[in-house]
Image (cartoon, rainbow, N blue to C red; front, side, top):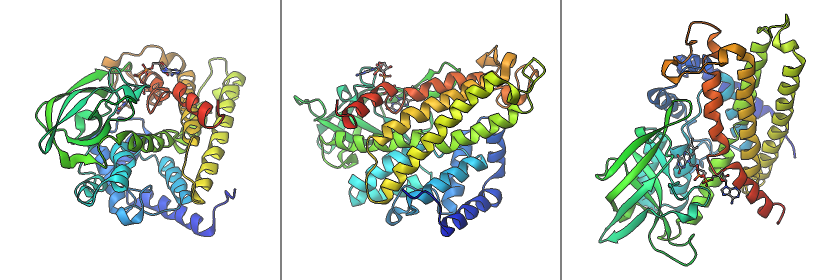
Amino acid sequence: MDITFTAEEVEFQNEVRVFFENDYPQDILEKNRNRQTISAEDMVRSQKALHARGWIAPNWPAEFGGTGWSPSKRFIFETEMARAGAPRVVPFGLSMVGPIIYTFGNEAQKKRFLPGILESNDWWCQGFSEPGAGSDLASLSTKAERDGDHYIVSGQKTWTTLAQYADWIFCLVRTSSEEKKQQGISFILIDMKSPGITVNPIVTIDGGREVNDVNFHEVRVPVENLIGEEGVGWTYAKMLLTHERTGIAGVARSKDQLETIKAIASKTDNGFGEMMSEDDDFLRRLSLVEIELMALEFTELRTLAAVQTGKAPGPESSILKIKGTEIQQSITELFVDLAGNYANAYLPEYYVPGSNVDGVGPDWAADATSKYFNYRKTSIYGGSNEIQKNIIAKAVLGL
Ligand SMILES: Cc1cc2nc3c(=O)[nH]c(=O)nc-3n(C[C@H](O)[C@H](O)[C@H](O)COP(=O)(O)OP(=O)(O)OC[C@H]3O[C@@H](n4cnc5c(N)ncnc54)[C@H](O)[C@@H]3O)c2cc1C
């Protein structure tokens, strides 16, 4: 495995740095650095700026409007984007359904849906999980019954992230009941404005609004919105989930967060006349996270090196997901440690992003506790970490 960057890659790194310094909305960087809420409108503006530069789809092949970059360039781009403080791209269109459409969709579907994803004119959400189907996703029961040239869809999806903004939802639905439950599942695209769809918020433990229940009551969906073959949706979903898990690892962002933690620690008193950066107990915990992160970065680079030689990412995506999310959670714990007393009381109703609730304590501490609570989600979504361990046990260890 060769993980040194070539001269061309170093030049590319500079090009990306210059773009974020000059041609990207600086107010969004400012907000994100100050740990303020990034609105849906900000996310769209951010993505449109990347699109204007031709960099919105690093994971897509050039023929469909992607950058066609090598995995190393994608790694550099991710790192520089996190370093600049830019928010993540919303993954549902660009990282999830986009690749499914250009891989398994027909020409008409590619023409109809890919431009809206690239230009961030269409906001997508993911309708996989249901109240009775999470880890055991193949037990899903949302039905799509054929009626002429439409499907009639009824059922409930849950935990649907950012559905409140969505124009479209990609769904796994049951089109037939077979002996093997993975069969009879189909992958369809549904316009969120269709009559019969209602979206209800689920308020998360930090008081936030990012997940929803989406109910379908006899929703008419044109048959032309079926991706690939009827009953083969499980195959497409598995590919999508591999992409989702690899994307969740967030190595570049965690590295950037650790740098922020170190900078704050050098200016924060531990209450015993030392800076937190001199506090042995804090340093021990910080070092453990840093070592884990360094190891994960090498795993990611090894995966990228394998992808570069033509291998598809397989169960590595599960390793990246488990370790990446454990590290993200540890980072939120380090922020709480640093915030000390200021992290004690957390009242979502009084929380003002980017400024401490009572005007007491540093601004960076304002969201320490809400992030700590919010990040409990990372070991659950994208397939829980326990399920990833099962995948590793089967696919890697052959148990
Ligand atoms: C914040 C958030 C956002 C999400 N966004 C989306 C979204 O946009 N779209 C979407 O479709 N879904 C989304 N999800 C759903 C997510 O994928 C599921 O929550 C996840 O797959 C777990 O399913 P479940 O919640 O039904 O838990 P369950 O499957 O009921 O699991 C409960 C517990 O049992 C454990 N468990 C279950 N089976 C096994 C087993 N065989 N071996 C060992 N342990 C097991 C699990 O690890 C977990 O700890 C989101 C979830 C969260 C929390």
